[in-house]
Image (tube, rainbow, N blue to C red; front, side, top):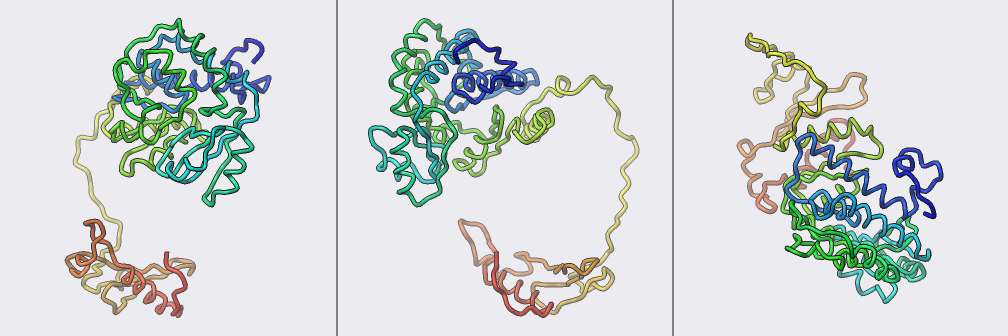
Length: 380
């Protein structure tokens, strides 16, 4: 960017079409993430540990107190300006493969830019070499829409100038735990408080997958303009809760309130008096709740299916069937339990009882026979 532009105007209007240029994208992303984090703070949401992704780690370092806002902005602006000034011609490629399978394909002009999951790697560097690798691999690949090859050997010409630009900044120890992109582990004392770390941060790979695991958190909130990292993080932790604060295809205010609601259901404190407009509290009704059932009382175990409009089936697993109004489909009803079918306990996978595929085939075939469709072509 050859001239100073107001970042707010560019983010919301982009009159000159520069938002997608590196020199403006990075400051805009930093501003959005910091503003969203501060908004969440005003709603009482507090992070126990921060995991960033590239420019996101700079935002995390600022909100954790490593940089003042002025110094963080100076770092981001210098980083973006120097990257923008590099020659174009680099490329980045996402490969759906483990890091160990990708490393042997690389050379001096291409490096690992990010390890986002167990089988999600991004390589970055010379476009000609990237194209050759893309043609050789047999797994799914995707080109990233970028102007420069970030976190690659092509960043090296800017590193000395970047270190000089940030050498006068003031650094502090973080007040909130931060996971380092460089190591994929919790940052150690003194690690984030030198210019050298942030210079290496430009050049080396983002070890996001390791960082998500190292956070040892049960609930993750993505503080950014979309839910891309939410999807990537789920590849590393299967049983965690992942919540994007905003989504690019959703109304921002609604998405944020829904995210707060999901956080609250996970036991995360939310100051709802700050979130909601001023309103009076309404007492709950003082009378006991009235219970009235609307379903037809039919007992499948006793064979009393006609009362519910069902047809009985003589089968050990299926109990009844009924045609949906309009005749477009038929519903089959049955019940599986270890009490009624104790043989189910003999089939376990990783310590959990799983209905065997043969039983599912039997259910499907019998349902087909009832409808004069005796052949099972495919079972999903």
